[in-house]
Length: 263
Ligand code: PEP
Ligand code: MN
Image (cartoon, rainbow, N blue to C red; front, top):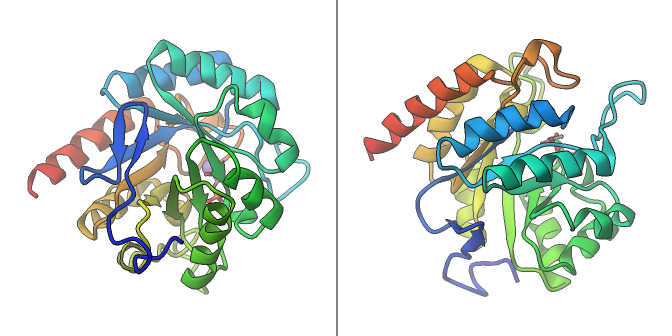
């Protein structure tokens, strides 16, 4: 059902008035994790000030170590929703288990399925039965074919509003956190009718690569870019190495807009 052969036209998803997948690139910015009301309010102000329509922030964090910050859960979602409402933003946030889904839907507009859960088939079926868009991230060791099949689980359960997100794959290369598989973007665009985003933060894991990777994503035909923004990345409870502060975010966004005008 996600195949171009089944449906030739692009799927366009209306998120908070923005037509995702309709041509102009969309953007999802926000902190790695929701840490406090003040933190998300500052980021929401910066995003809203640019006229953007979405904010991200994790409340249920899938962390490698059980001793690392696990997220604020439902309280975090409430904080993110409050900040989003203040600046007219839609909330994008990860859900890690079907049992959290129903309560979270009061606060989340776009449900993210993270890389580690790309083949959590019960979660895929669960988000397939809701009436909100799903941002599905590629598993870190998933082939394009497995990624497409994961999306098929969601659509097979009834939800067609799926954004695919390339977020880097695991290779032998250590210069970046993951290896951004940029060619996956046009392949996914050819094989499916779904919008395709690139997460430049988790793919590169390097602040100095966030801009060139986003330019590459837009140039190769991505429908949108995701990147992490935190008021004070040095003290962030997760992904401190790679988030932009607000000043860097302003410069980043200006540079990307300038780049896009060349097209
Ligand atoms: C995230 O976007 O917050 C995240 C954890 O990314 P990924 O699932 O791609 O690792
Ligand atoms: Mn992160």
